[in-house]
Image (cartoon, rainbow, N blue to C red; front, top):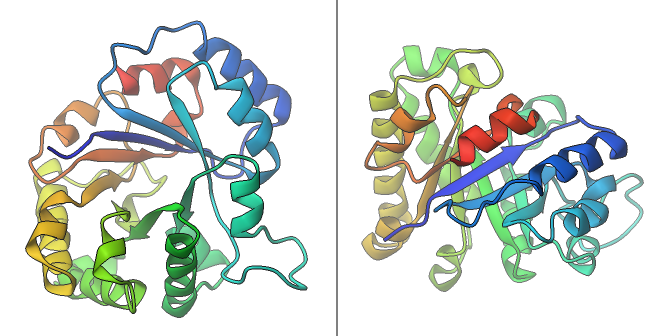
Length: 248
């Protein structure tokens, strides 16, 4: 049985004071009866503090990005060892905003994925098509291209650590949500592609999340789909009330 994962991505939001207020509010709730795994990907400057603030809850703290090299003259970047040294064990890789705004290539995504696995971090690998690619009927080939290039040289005994987040680019932060059935078809395609790259057993057990304008009003329909194991949520994870509704 695959785990259900509710992941929040704060992106470039929240001051330390706002994160503390969020944590104080979260800690007032009893999350012991929630059945999902829960994680918040937060800005790197607050990771250590947030990890301590949320220690009494069931919520894990993850990092939004890391450099593909272990160390060096890369001003402003954060390394895998830095992340691990403060108790963080999960990393977001290949988010469309990193690809679009910071020119991260498939090669860089692959290098980050390989390093994360080598360092025993859990990588959340993001893939997704543009509206033009979907309209042109090349969604599956786009997803396959991204997955094949991202997973180059990944050994089969390491593949089961990867969590895939399917985020159609046209649905991220736009208010447009992929029809739940269409999202399920895309995730089924991803599972089939994973079987082609690795094997059927890896594919059957691979956790696949959906991301793209998920909120409390549509999460139940999304999670009811057979191939979707959880969600990666942006804006709806920033507000405590909304986030708690997602977890429940």
